[in-house]
Amino acid sequence: MEVSEAFGQVLRKHRKAANLSQEYLALHCELDRTYIGLLERAQRQPSISTIFSICKVLEVKPHILIKEVEELIN
Amino acid sequence: MEVSEAFGQVLRKHRKAANLSQEYLALHCELDRTYIGLLERAQRQPSISTIFSICKVLEVKPHILIKEVEELIN
DNA sequence: GTGTAGACTTGTGTCGACC
DNA sequence: TGGTCGACACAAGTCTACA
Figure 1 (cartoon, rainbow over the protein chains, first blue to last red):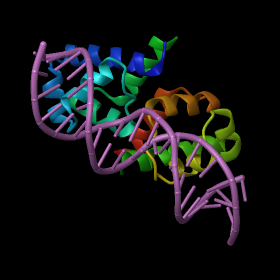
Figure 2: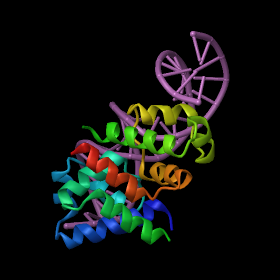
Figure 3: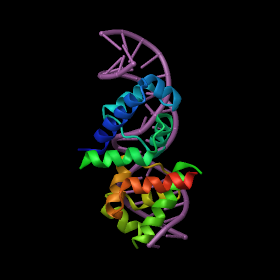
Figure 4: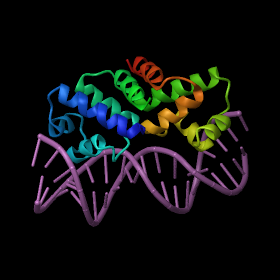
């Protein structure tokens, strides 16, 4: 599996777990709503700072999320 | 400290620990030599796939590297 | 609440060259 | 071996709008 695909799945999982809408998440990490959707559908690659911003709002440590991405890839 | 700054420091630390030149690292993760330099000097933000490519060559798991970045920021 | 589309600005990542 | 510079292609990220 590709990195962006794994990231999209992990992101969606954590967003749903936190019970947040794409809209709410986007607003609070200062990103665009449509962009969060693009990330979840693996049509964009987030930069490291984008990952950190999203994790802050999701209240998940970035390395935890990255670890899950690694596990999905293998 | 900013994310890119922390990443640059962690990257340089691991590259030196592995005893690799910027050129060698760049060659083996299919990136440009000048770009590795830009990352280490925090003048560029890597995308998630770039992080994974670099980690593969450095033989460090991405989440380990990210964890070190988190610790540097705080 | 989400997916998609187009048009747009900014930044990533490449390349050749010189110090 | 690494820093810097300029020019470049293309992807990230924004915004509006409609389904």
